[in-house]
Length: 133
Image 1 (cartoon, rainbow, N blue to C red):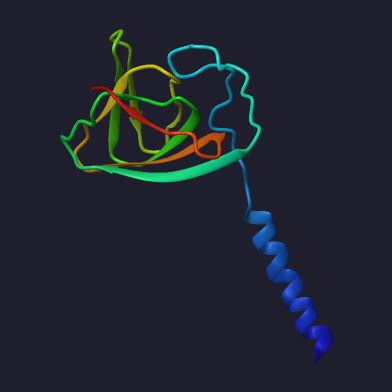
Image 2 (cartoon, rainbow, N blue to C red):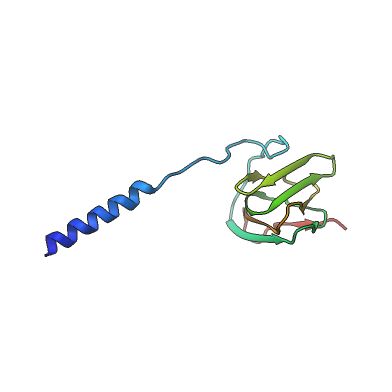
């Protein structure tokens, strides 16, 4: 009986492990607007993961991020604009290597609410976003 259970477990485990896949969605040494990513000095590293939900038709305030961050759009459509007029349109499943120290805003431009999961990498206590006054 034990041999049977071990065999069943092994088959199930092998089947699930074989289903795992990975895909590089984006790899770059620059943000989405081709600005090179600067070397970071992380003396006390801290990673923050944030889910941001933007109702359809809503526009975020002008802001910038002083630290490295990357995101992945999980719902809707998001259009990002910089002060220089650069534009990026994200669809569901699109990654973004966000601009650093660049004033920009995002707008939910699809037919449903937008949702993006963002990972910020900095030192403990660093601000992740600064609003423009």
